[in-house]
Amino acid sequence: MEMAMSQLPEDILLDILSRLPKKSQRRSQVVSKEWRRLITESAASFSTVRPLDQGFYSYIFDAASFLDEVKFYCLDSKGGYELRHWLPISPFCIWSVSGSTNGVLFYSKMIDYSQGKFSYHLHNPVTNFSADLYPPPNPFVSKGDNFSTGSGLALDPDSSSHYKFILVYTPCGGFGMTRSCYPKIAIYSSETGEWETKLAMFDSDSRGLLDCGCWSRSVYIKGSLYWNYYNELLVIFYVKTEFFRVIELPYSRNSDYDGVVWESEERRVNYCQVCEFKGLSVWVLDDERAEKGSKWRRTLNVSLEELDSEFGKAIGRLDMSTAGGPCQRVTGVSAFFEHHQIVRLRSTEGIVSYDIAEKRMSMVKPGSYGSEDEVPFTFTKFDLPAAADHHVVLGKGRRTSTKRKSVQLEASDLEHP
Amino acid sequence: MSESTEKKMVRLRSSDGEVFEVEESVAKVAKTLQDMLEEDCADAVIPITCVRAPILTKVIDYCKDQVMISSSSSTTNNPNERTEQERKAWGQKFMEGVDSSTLCELLVASNFLNIEGLLNLGVDKMVSMIQGKYPQEIRDMFNVVNDFTPEEEEEIRNQNAWAFERDPYYKKRSSSK
Figure 1 (cartoon, each protein chain N blue to C red):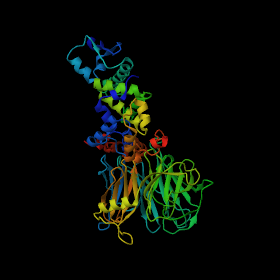
Figure 2: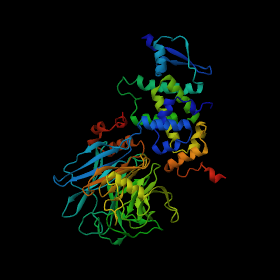
Figure 3: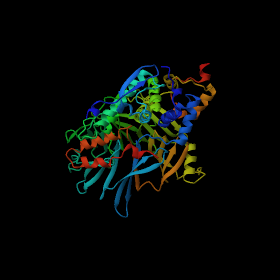
Figure 4: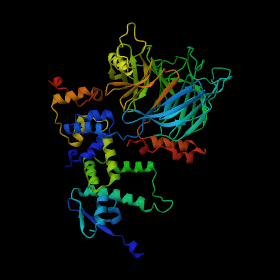
């Protein structure tokens, strides 16, 4: 009762403050002068010891050798990038790297070209767990192929040791044709080990008619899957009730720039986009059931001028004010790593990363963005061991379980010396 | 044989005068006490001057648990052995309901007694308590006095505006007029 924080030895307080997420650190600077001094000091002398929680997969297809590979990176405490794991699955023949939930990658392979048959695969590079899923044919087409419009993995190691894998089927599957329809869904449940196909149900006040075509990568946040639908709409799928809901994205117009739906540090839905005129913005979804306009709240804005000038510096071109619009430009957002306050952006010159706190952009992967793709991911905090155990459970009877445990990364491996 | 059944006891006295009698093995979890005991001052009561009785009770609980885990670990098939996950869950449970001032005292105690495991638990707990809180909430929780002038505070807030969005506890000076 009589003990106050000020009586803590300084090195302990320093340790505590250095372990806080960046945002909390910045906030805590105004607590008192002492705290401000310590936080400034901790930023300089300590690297954060928070365990691995964010990163991305990088998918590389080498057209010359016909080999593809997926690398697994994690953000390190200084905001740089580190290769954590190789994922050598060869011959790989990936059709598309579809996404990632809680760090588990899922991708599709074409297994029968003549019939248009795909298989889906889950992989956790930390535990080396993998699962192969063979979805039922698309009910809209007679030929028996199973092209899908969207896919998502619902996996929450905190609440259940099971996962569901969801495919969205439309008449023209994953191809770029647009035709409005009510989609059907196929759901695989690891609990039963079976697929179930049903008509997609929509919440009463949302539109059920969606164009087919290829939906973006899904993001799974707290029981729901989210798709950014052509930077115009947000498609929500509630995994438990199996209902869809469609709402407007905050910057709802067909934009040149790709936005990304992302998970915030508080496990809420973020939408991050570069907009014409407005620059880079991040919104948080306050209430998806609210009236139009009050659903989204803008939490961050970086002006287009600043973005452009930083981009110019990053690619070594100082004057970005070319008449008629520069052909070198940022084309979209790939991920927003809130903890590190880093936005990864796609550009015509490669992938760049923008540090919001430092206001600095740097080129992280030069090159055209066609041959290389990224699947960013987020682990919810501290759930890495849970996810690992989870996959041993999932591996039911497979010989993966015992041996693979040894390749788990220890939290200590991930810390910086 | 008879020697091992009779466990050596150590007496510790808290700052408010309460005396605790614990097994030597329990006391030795604290590195500070281990060093003392090895220098042989076992008969006397060891004064722990900066730790109050309720805190010392908690510290001893922790040490007892550590002894329970490690004592049987030499035998095979130890029922007390914990996986990484169980350890985490245990730590969370141990720290459950600990308020901020008790936590400060616990940190001071584990620092003084040099118990690394407990110190880490405490620091983790502290981090989870501070995380996501607004400055005023932190000040209230830990009795920290705000020694910034309003101008200074506003300047720091402006520099890091993104971290302060929607602080319900903060009113700008100009708007409060």
